[in-house]
Length: 286
Figure 1 (spheres, rainbow, N blue to C red):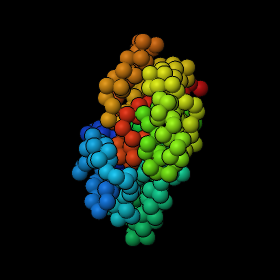
Figure 2 (figure 1 turned 60 degrees about the vertical axis):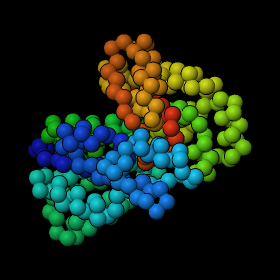
Figure 3 (figure 1 turned 90 degrees about the vertical axis):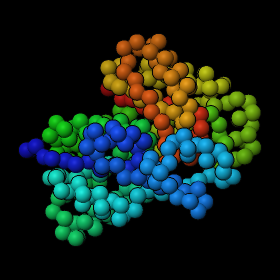
Figure 4 (figure 1 turned 45 degrees about the vertical axis):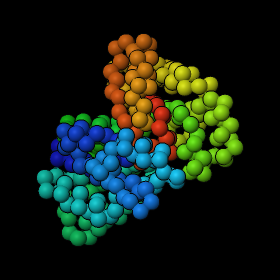
């Protein structure tokens, strides 16, 4: 199959820094964060740190909204100016309607006569697990892979993604109706930290830790046991840079040659994690 110029489109639910997306020639569409009657475009009108400060001061949890059909249509038309194909990489469809919206937009531009084919792909990930997949897609596109080839390889990568994290508190989960108030308050009072993983498009728990120190150690042990040492691991945090740096050092003590990047968790997922969350995203061994 001949090399194709594939333009990638994604949205800020992947938490990839805008500067990096620009350097990789990836179109990044902002999600929206809503506090009461006020709406902000993620990354352009509100930073992660500003978001966590506003959320802590608010009585109710904010909400988020994915890009509209019109947002996607505009992005597809712009990308089509210098592309043979467009590949749109979306947050997991099991937690968001973004995928369905992008599919609707792809149908719209096709009916309007856009000749450049638009493919929409469900990464089955979010935040930095999704960012890992977007980076992989950018590397494939740079190598000349077609959109179909990239999607096939991404599907192979899905099952190899390791995304583990520990929450500081169940407070936001309680506010969002995910757990009962008594259960959340009891866990917080006892210093119990939920251990979570992201797989098959959903978040699930895999244990609890006695305090954040134990939680971070158990998350790091997952990378030491399962991760590919020569591939970059992302340490992500929700307004907790010191904690992320500590996790990085823990990894380096176990795997001295590990390549580690530290990134922030943005509003789309931060609504549910709350401040203080820390975790890792990496590729598992075969």
